Length: 177
Image (cartoon, rainbow, N blue to C red):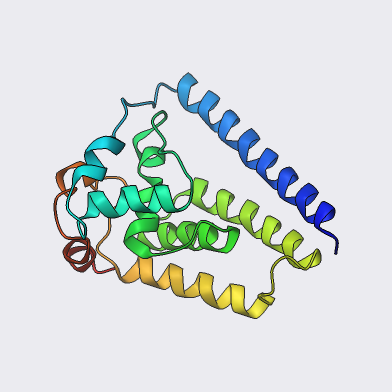
């Protein structure tokens, strides 16, 4: 497949994500679920290496991402799940995050997001962008789900702002991740 086709598919996927986030933001705004910004990048960058906060900032910087500074608490803490679990920001990594969250606490929104990601993963396989086969993706998602089930992580109540200065390894151990 030529690079212009890959670029076109990637642009289309980015537009879908942007559209989803726009609609999600509109809904959460209408339901009055938004909270003040939680993630303060300057502060996180100032923390010592090895801390949860510093690892969070490194994750965002390494992936060229900006923190969610609007929306509901759980959305703003999304990138922290990547930090705690080590799952990537590619479609399979994002699906692993949703599977982990489903395992730790079932919420319909995580299932719907996960199903949307699976559709994107299928498109990538059809266009030969993703080399993982169906069995490999399924295995990774099952492992992420089970990891969430066996963890002590509570996605609705965790308070990372109270953990920023703690060792990432200690936080992961405390949550059983």
